[in-house]
Length: 151
Image (cartoon, rainbow, N blue to C red; front, side, top):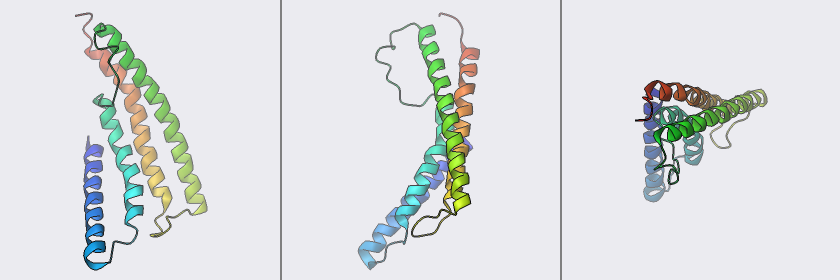
């Protein structure tokens, strides 16, 4: 939950940055340099930090039109399968994002205008993806612990 709150705080700062940049451009012909880089890089970080909390709350968007009237056990089984698939996919994403961060650090990749080191963002995103994978693998345990049979 703390990472989701941190993500929300970063999102708020991004919104303030955008408003100040637009106002500066409109009133003073002086936008914040690199505002688009700031928003682009931090958007990915915000999403990655909020995903683990979303997964633990089962807050991801699902299409349950066909399963809404299905028995509870079937719906729970589908939630478990979906959660495990999500965990596996995010484990792969975490690995490759981490690896991309190592490559970005090795080659000194920077953003174009502000010269921010890209690997910081890669590693933060990889951390969020790793926590999402862990949440994907842990949520089925919580679902099974709360299951009370076919009531």
